[in-house]
Image (cartoon, rainbow, N blue to C red; front, side, top):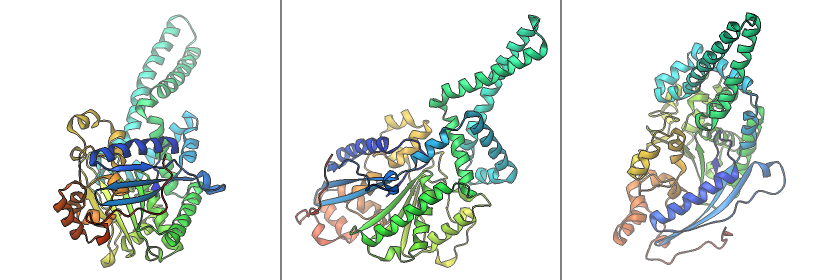
Length: 426
């Protein structure tokens, strides 16, 4: 169950990316993969909020079926991005300086200076663009006065030019700068942390109820709730609220795992008002029936690294703490060197490497997590054995099956067992 972050791109773009990256994954490991077309739930409120597709993957001696659900927020995000430019700028600037004077920005700097720099970037860029536009407007006003225009009229004309030039520049450069998008993101996280986004809370509650229903009815071996980027705090909220609805959520049958990738939980949790969010983190840290794995990367400026999502929020979980397991990843180890050097300074591209296909076999591989034969906890507790299972020689694979304690019928010396309910392939 994939929890989308604060990204206006919707189902069609994510599905195309998934299908493209799945092909790369199959080619890298010499696997047969098929994926169905996206399906939406029956008519109703939930139909516009999720979609799903099915993947079947076959390797040497194993076969898996994965039902992949995509939880959607893009309609809410696109509504935010439709705000007038002046409103977005005024609101975001006010929030930024409130973060500074409240000390929250200082906590960001202490936790991860790269993220603090990144969150400051749109404001620095805005100041730079405003200075250039102001210089042009001042020169225009001075020229009008030199021509004999009254100083008041010249000042009004210069002000109008400044506003028009800045607005035009912001819109013209948005595809490269992401300034307005990042400011909208700042506004959203502020409002969410202060309980001012009831439409988001209502959707999270519906997703939590859906998770409860899936856990109670699914025949899957494992249910993985994946939260990427802002989806990290949204996913943790979904799981915590599901546990409040059903404290036995992880005891019904399928294992429940929260997988947070490139997380930025402090942008919500560091606010003094976010007491409920921190209480939910404490619940996840101590709940014995679920697993939580948090994957981080130093290269990604949009996540906190190194960061403990529990102690970093000054949460004392006590001796009962069991989550999360923190897994660091180096992207240069999973991407070919020449390609890595081409995108290493493209921050959004780096951020999405968490959910893109590897170019080199590695113990961290998102598509192997989704489609591989090893359950998630074992994959990270015994990463070398999990990798050897798909890349090693036959004798090495047999040893890996034994080491991982997997079902004997699934070993390479037994026939492949296919699920009776097959995917409708796209």
